Length: 165
Image 1 (cartoon, rainbow, N blue to C red):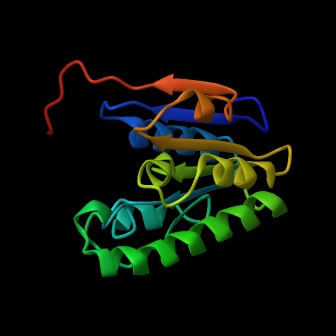
Image 2: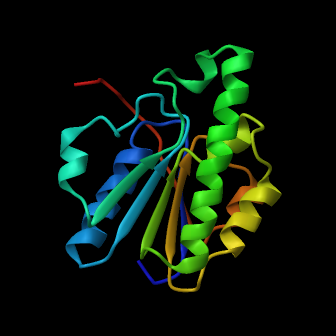
């Protein structure tokens, strides 16, 4: 990866988050610091003992409190989680502004646009806060021209055959 670029892993196929995690491991192995902020993942990776062993090179954050997937929550719980998600976005903005890491992965951040939690303009503002050295990877299913314009590189993930191990 060239320094200071924005990458998108998108599409309806499986493997976007694993691709981002693979890049996190590659970056950490090269001596870079990595932060991952997960959105809309329910339980996500935060409960994994393996992930905690990767610290301090790779740090994972999840601001949502619910262990359930966002789309399955009641309207009241969604409102609570949206406040938590906004805290996560504010944290991401701070990380980008201070250059606290070399690579920031915003896992499923495009789903925030798809669920109308944030707008593309708010996502653009978030990315504009970054210093020029920080790489950003954004993942999610939604991909349109407006979102593509935010990135230096866009990868579409498509499943030809998928079988959970």
